Amino acid sequence: MRPLWQPSTLDPTQRLTFHHEPEFGSLRIIGLPTTGQAKSRHIRTHFIFELLPLTQARTPPYCVNQLNSIERNNPPRHPVTITHTWSVGDLCEAVRDTFTAVFPDELWLEGEIVGLKDHSSGHVYFDLIEPSTTGNRVDKMSVALWRGRRPSVESILSRADTGPLADGIKVRIRGELTFYAPQGRVQLQMTAIDPHHTLGQLAVDKEKVLRTLSLAGLLEANAALALPAVPLHIGLITSDGSAAYNDFVDEIASSPYPFNISLIHSSVQGADAETDLLTAITVMSEHRVDVIAIVRGGGARTDLMTFDLESVARAVAGSPVPIFSGIGHEIDRSVVDEVAHTAFKTPTACAAALVQRVATFNQRLTESSRRIVALAMNRHDRATALVSSTARTINDRTRRTLDVTEERLGATKARVQGLARIAVNRETQRIDRIVDLIGALHPDRVLARGFSITRNKNGEIIRGTVAPGSEISSETASSLITSTVTESHLRQTEETND
Image 1 (tube, rainbow, N blue to C red):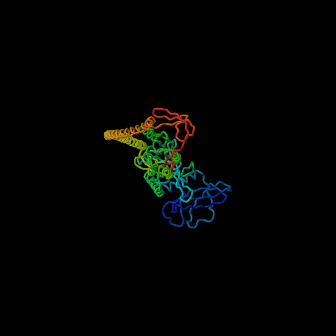
Image 2: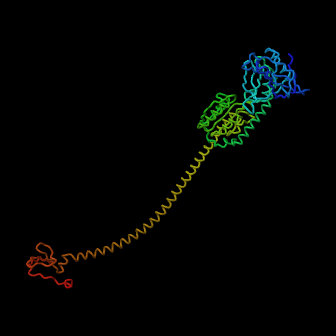
Image 3: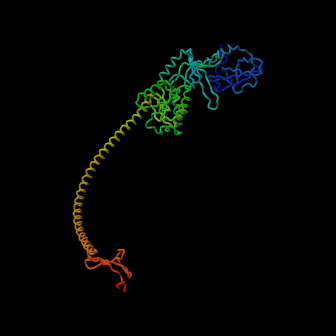
């Protein structure tokens, strides 16, 4: 079937809506013009028709009318009369032919991949979207990559190291725009891809995130955290059982140190990767681990998109625990690498760094222990030598002191002995004098000198007066005289006279 209208210069963004008689519903006619100037004020173009039935329609609105001319500046004010009835097949064929005429060659299309499905037949289906900047509307185009074209596309991606097609990747692809009648939809049949567009867009997005983080002061936030001297408790975030997991754990296990690894499984690419990583970082940050290690194996640049996301980077930067990254890409650094405490090329290198830090501390501890032992032994030897020297000094001084003391004691002894002899002689003489005095005062000596001792009848020595008639006895040196007192007088003395 020939096209209904030839291309014109209608504005590509212009959409014209015309209405036919109400009983048939509403007919919206969307212009798809091509280049070239119209020679008159009448425009001829191809159109895609979208029939919008009214709820009150009496007849299914499957009718379209061939419009021979439309005034650009003065569209008809009255409903267009529908005079021709199309079959669905004829209409689909007409639309397909129209697309062939408007887009005779392949075209380039850019957008973001969503809803990618790898069919068991080998075909790949996905949509390219372009979110609106002003609202929630999303423009979408269905894309099919047939099995026969797939090897060439994958070869292009492999040579550029961009990785396979996946949701979330922004691409620029080439293909043929077709109308797929069985589903009544427009579809782009993909034939090629521009990997440099994807890489460039990834770089642009990455730089945008880095600028945002820099303005927020988050690039050095995690790096500013103090790393424990002995990080033996490691919080590991990776895909459980993956090559990255095995490489990391094997490196840790081969060390002689008692590491403790707490694992939280997380997807590292794909639709669930962002949510998994955010959850894992949050949970691990709340545990008492010394350091968090986020690792994944090698892969294409697009496989690392999750690690360039601002949300993941903010979670890493804001963690209160130092985070080591081992993303496993030899060339590019992800945004997570930039905000992590320390970044490494591979999971093995990340684990080796932790082992080395503990080994370094252990070495310093060993060296410190040796220095302490050497210092203690040195001080012990010095103390022993000092004790020996002090002992010798004490012995020498003691001997000298003893000698001096002995000499002093000898002199003192001699002096004491001399003084003692003098004192003894003096006391002996004094005692002799006392003895002589005592001997002179002995009653017998007194009696011998003519004195007598007078006693009363009771034998008591009379020292005072005696009553007349008292019987007394007087003892002389050679006799005892008994007398009776006839008269007694007080003897006059100087004291009495006084």
